[in-house]
Length: 336
Ligand code: 5MM
Image (tube, rainbow, N blue to C red):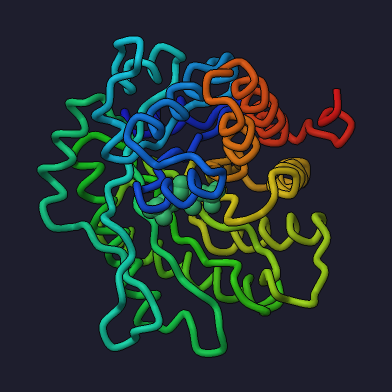
């Protein structure tokens, strides 16, 4: 087993999942302002150190993705954030893209940037304790989008990023996110997501990326958020499994889904059914941002000193997702 494959399995085996706490300052500001908390470096740290000190980190979370500001921060009790994460047994990850920018010649679409100087930044992050990295390509759906240009250029960037991350002895999380914004059907999402993922693997293979040392972080197959289609969790799980079976090479050890704007319960229920019906050899777990932190953030904002209340909510959500990652979740468990 290669070193990279060992890292992957440490992060996502046995129902463990990933906490995506890599909101850029701009996104974190939106999240904090939505609950009336000023977005200062201290407040961003305080919320994050509260959840990272939670009990459930030990049994449920295999990896935490951080943003550059956070990986460099020290907790109020003196430990560095990467040390706090490793004290719970999880690995530190780092978002290394520098954001999605307007794509030249297709200005309504996005290309993710951040390749310049990446090799040097990766060395710095490795020294700070990072053992995996993340890069997100974003694609929107309409009749003409995602265009071939957006599909190709983002796949190319994801592959170049992945090759550099593996060269630095870290695991790349490959995140092609087909957004749920729009009125498209789940079948359209299936078709476009399949095309996006297949192109990513064409490029990863061309760039000689070791597929046993990556984690794929895709969206689930959902109808658009303005669609009239009502798609059941059963259909979501079937279409998602079919899409991944047809577009992901067998060497890939695992998939960690993003929540993408689903509610906490939806994201949990869908993951649970995916695991109940999973006939592939891929591990299927979570790498959620909003679906793990939303309720915890709300409670925390009411009294930022009540760490226990924040941690109780976070622990519950994380435990539910870890059960879902093993196909063992049920509605009844939500209220126990
Ligand atoms: C945590 O949010 C990440 C994006 O942050 P920026 O937009 O500020 O760069 C995002 O990549 C996240 O890791 C994934 O989308 C998963 O988060 P959700 O909320 O979709 O589960």
